[in-house]
Length: 72
Image 1: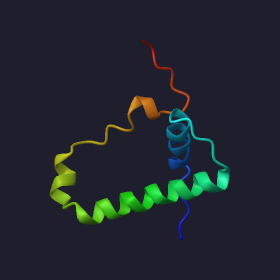
Image 2: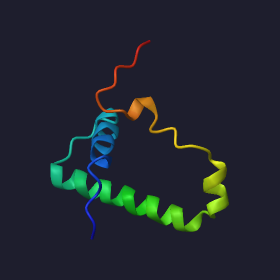
Image 3: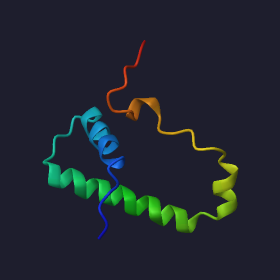
């Protein structure tokens, strides 16, 4: 099984923190792997035309940027 990309782990940690979850590092890696598998499945199911219509990659939502400061 492939390791989740290093860039995915901070977002998974931030999402879990925002929801109030605290897991050991091994479990966080397992959760990140699950997200990676879901993304892989979605890429194979969705036709390329839909992906192309989505436009340029805008990046993650600001709320999931680890260390981002959200001003009111």
